[in-house]
Image (cartoon, rainbow, N blue to C red; front, side):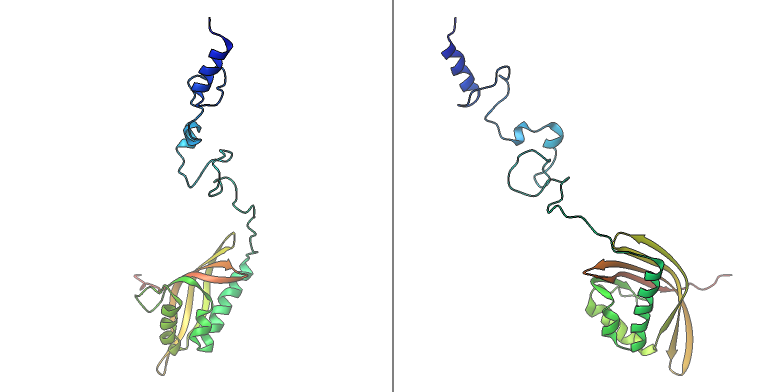
Length: 202
């Protein structure tokens, strides 16, 4: 018959020097925390620990905001879409490429009307407008569809540009998409696609 001291020695051996919990002889008390995580938790990578695992310092769990802040959505309306286009159109009429570029975010993408080259920086967007503004363009919305999101607004439809080509004045119908995002207290264009309407096959 074993004495109380023998049972204590066995529990200590099971726990790697720490007393073992009775009935848990197959649990390694000296194993790492990750070795004792649930199956679903073990399938998560180190960058996305599960809440409450006690894994110590590192990125915040996936289901807990890192700084406990909430996102505030700026108001977005149809009137806002109209005002943002009017601001951009008014900048065109100044003839100042820098005034036009100021409407675009730093990482904006422009797929322009009369160029096959995508513009993905302020410098490239400015280069396009330096030439386009020589035509003295004035835009008029013909039809628009507006979609709203949190700090995001999409305005897509058709417009007509009145431009000058030498002594001739031309009306150029085109399709457009403006995607705006609210950043640092202002709405900026993050994506702008404009293409001339295809020829009428009918």
